[in-house]
Amino acid sequence: MKQYDVIMIRFGELSTKKKNKANFVTTLYHNIRQRLKRVEGLEYEKAYDRIYIHLHGVSHLQIVHKLAEISGIQSFSLAILVPGTIDAMQEAALDLLESSPPGTFKVSARRSEKNFPLNSMEINQQVGAFLVAKTQRKVDVKQPNVIIHFEVRAQGVFLFDSSSPGLGGFPLGAAGKSMLLLSGGIDSPVAGYLMMRRGVKIEAVHFASPPYTSPGALKKVMDLLKVLSEVQGAIRLHIVPFTALQERIYELPQDTYAITIMRRMMYRIAEQLALQNRCTVLSSGESIGQVASQTLESMRTINEVVTLPMIRPLAVMDKNDIIAYAKRIGTYEISIRPFIDCCTIFTPKNPITKPTSKRALEYEDRLNYQSLLQTCLNSIETITITPDDPSIPEIDAFF
Image (cartoon, rainbow, N blue to C red):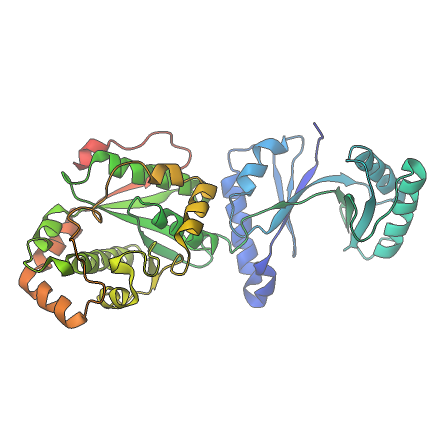
């Protein structure tokens, strides 16, 4: 196995943010260090347009999969550090090319150290000519089989032949925090992942209705957050005992509005939790038209009970695209476990798809829901899910 000296990390959108770039890069730098805190022997360096991890003999294999899960990283490369002389560069390039697949090649140099005696074009020409003479391989500047990259810096020359993609987006925490409504289905974990990718940390709220919902449904939510915590680190989960309020809602003689009223109650509780925990927005896995409560008219009527913005990352995504995303991030198999959540119990035969605010308020006036809502808020249990802790809290305690 090839031994690398350094991992070069690039940022994408951060470079377009001008005045905010320094803060974003600093946040990314700290996120990387936090994610790799259990790997000993690493040295970190922050530059204007790169973050470097100097390996000092540490295997890259225990690092690269963790970097691939950090939002804000556009790409990264495993590199060899050689002295800043043309002879050292030529010999290192020869070793790299001889271990690469056969075919054409190209040399691509980038000179950040302006005191280096050769410019980028001269480096390309001299190293390329040397490699042709030594290997008889041909140069193809348009579609080469192998590209040998040089980055010339004050501390030496970094040499690499490939890059791995990162998550992109913004560093986690750079854009604030959201309270995610997490049901346990396919959609909401994907929404949480997309929020994190845009730099938004999440806390999650889950509505449990025992005995109608089972311990398996709550275990599913915890396991989903375990997956998402691989990206964020520790995630707080707020478990709302929703049974009494939900039963009262479904005692209404006109049950076509039951889902609308239920969602309005969930939004009210989620907003209070968000305000208590310094979340700037709410978020959910809703997608336009997917179910009765997700028509535009339903969204408007449900949304009016809160003042915080509700972010819906999946609003215009097709269900098949959402499923593909869930499979990609590792939540799909957990989400399809056969345990129903409170959103799928007591489902009316004909839920209204175009509810009005006036009718919703009329039904809510009959409920005298304020005391039930306050009971829910007073009875919330909060736990923390982490990627490193193999244990899951005792679920029976919540039922």
